[in-house]
Length: 181
Image 1: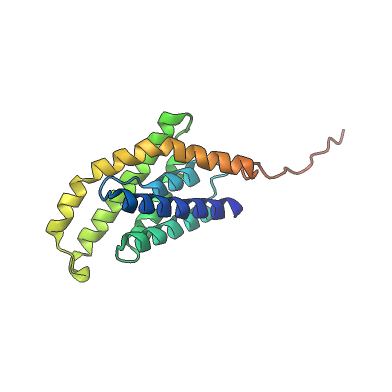
Image 2: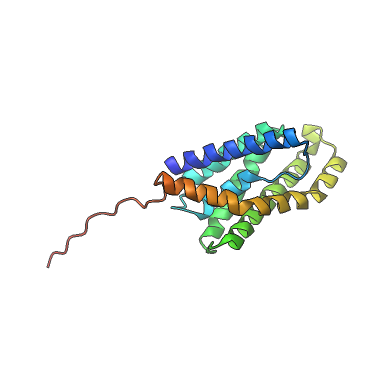
């Protein structure tokens, strides 16, 4: 559970850092989704537990909902479903090296963005969202994905380093097996 809490804290700090730097630098469109990288790390690294990882996904999605001003629950849902897909994929894909870290982070951001757009399209009428405003946003997501891929290896390394320093990557001690010959 400490790993999940660490993912959540680092994810929240990175969301605040990216948002703060974007405001200071006057950036508005090409911002990396550091929380997508944290979500990919939670799905692919360490013990890969479903329930704590899903808790991280829901919590990070809620933080992103609040940070981006999205209708509450849209990004929470997108993060939760994306984590389930990533967790399933983690049992089939080995992530070794910077390129694979970037690739699974790209997969995470693509899933989150696609699910977010689809949810907003489905709920456009009840939420009073003009669907014609969503299409240009969907087309600009390629730059969002590119920015995420570029920051994925350093963010992944930050997470790995944090878990190593605080010894959160250590496997739980196994039971003592005695040889009864």
